[in-house]
Amino acid sequence: MSRIGKRTIAVPKGVTVTLDGQTVSVKGPKGERSWTVAEEIEVSQNDEGINLGLRTDTQRGRAMWGLSRTLVDNMVVGVTTGFEKSLDLVGVGYRAAMKGNALSLQLGFSHDVDIEPPAGVTFAVPKQTEIKISGADKQAVGQIAAVIRKLRPPEPYKGKGVRYSGEKVRRKEGKKK
Image (cartoon, rainbow, N blue to C red; front, side, top):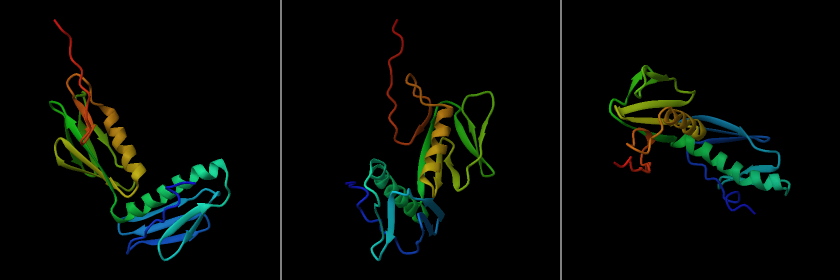
């Protein structure tokens, strides 16, 4: 039995959930998301919220049960509060700026790197060395944050690069004389 799958998903006020067969659609103040649940999972809605259960007790069904519940819960959280990731730029001359709604990064290359946000994702640059990525889709926010971090990952000798806020970079000792 899935401990995660058994839990009921609470639906806050201002959020509308529509069930159409295996498709779950969630609409809220931050946007609209929909996802088709696997055939092995049964979705039901009552006064308390959304419940997911097993339709067939197979290995794939048990595997998809907790995953499906988490993905539907992420849709509800995304349309109410949204998701946000913060990145820090560490290094001399490393800076970020906005060009329209695109993000322009100076990361020590011979050219600036411009990144267009995917649909439903917005960038913000509160300081030159800080980037905030926000949106209703947790996967899209995390994916674009990983793409930006991969441009210049933190290196272990000086700690320069793009890192998540709060990320600890394991430092190495340099050469000895």
